[in-house]
Image (cartoon, rainbow over all chains, first blue to last red; front, side):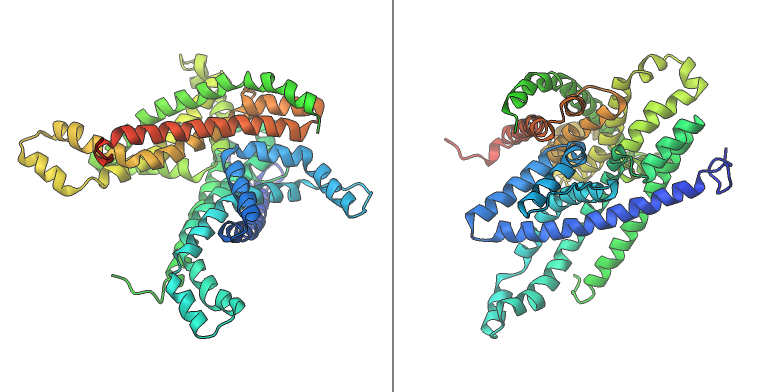
Length: 234
Length: 229
């Protein structure tokens, strides 16, 4: 049984490890993209422009209210078409095909971003208003306030919530296997099919995911402790 | 945008709603029972049950639902013991495999919500009940549970919405619920956006109704917070 999981010629160890690396790569890229979407979404939600708040509100409501799998199907089947449509606006008439990796990152990033938006918005609002006023009174420009007062504190407040979003993102990447990208789930599915040992390989997949989520829990705990090193505890 | 195709896909997609509702309804029902048992075993059991239940929650919260579904649907059939048992009547059906996976998944999450809610019941109320001479079970039934359920409703509402969305994964094991039908129509007609808009709207509507229902339950359970008219 363990020969099947080994790194030898009959083993799937190498492929499973590659799948784990791919899962981490998709998760990290999607999470980073989600942070970009989240920051944009949060600033849109907090802005005074009605159109901007409306767009951000629709984005978070739709993406958080519709199954992840549906969003992935939308981008898997319609992503290339949408990118080509945007390309045509800018005068590019050629054929663009997105690979499975970029579709996965885009889809999961879009989902991750909707959750990040809410987390970041809450964190920005948690920064006491008096501090902004104080910074303004000191003569800081808007940019300097953002860099020195708002962002450092927002990061600290947002960290626990972003930890949750990271775990969701990590687990959502399993759904990308429907696009045949060789991440943990896809490799296990192929291995299970060709060796007729589904229980063994899906258990291995579960263990790999558990390992990833456990390591991330510890990492985020450390990051939180580091971010709160200057905060007095009761 | 192909409006005609979009309009035509509405009744087809609506045919998936009963399957989705069955999946969600049964999983939530069984999941609530699992969650109740797990929370009680973690809070009032001995060290062994406490560890076991903590391990169950850890595993089911730490792995994607898709792994759980595949493990049950494809993995269970590998064992002769399962195939020859009476359970096989259920476990060979994708519908019951999906129900089992969703149940165990939501059971793990809900047990944590319930455990937190039970722990949040003020100690003074429990002491007061004990001072009135209530037995342990009476105290639990009359004081702890009603307060805890009221406390957990908002978090449970999120879980219900997550379950509505999670039921879409049943389409990966051949079930034709809303997402499964949507995928089929897309594969036949390539009308990606039209189908996404219709299927997405159905899900949004279901989630809206679910959140309203939870809101109503919350309102019903907090008559003392309402102004007297």
